[in-house]
Amino acid sequence: MRGLLVGLCLGWGAWAWAGNFPGEQPTYMREQGYEERFAYVSSGNGAGQVEYQGWAQPNSATSAVRWRIRRFTYDTSNRVTAIEWAGGNDAWDQVWDNRATLSY
Image 1 (tube, rainbow, N blue to C red):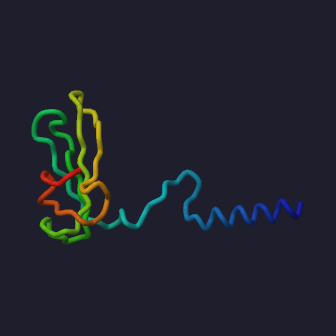
Image 2: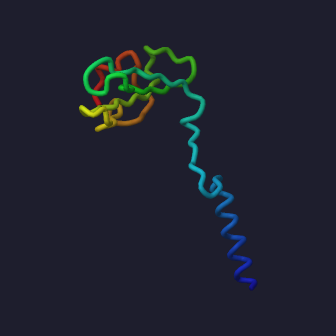
Image 3: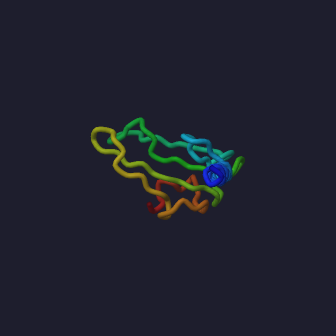
């Protein structure tokens, strides 16, 4: 019985340290409190859908090198076929105003 109690206490300690209750999804600080922008497909595949999504610290200029940007590609049925990060990663080193000419 003592071993069971110790096991339960150790299990509880590890679970409580993790910071999430069972069934909860983790939230990362880098995704909280940032400005978020969207640009939409104007015509063709995915018309009216989100084409670019970007994040930056609040009050960042769209011309500042402080953005992380991803691009969505759609098929003829308006289903997402690819999600790509500008520069090939999710670093905060892109310019929102240049989103259409960046390499993904």
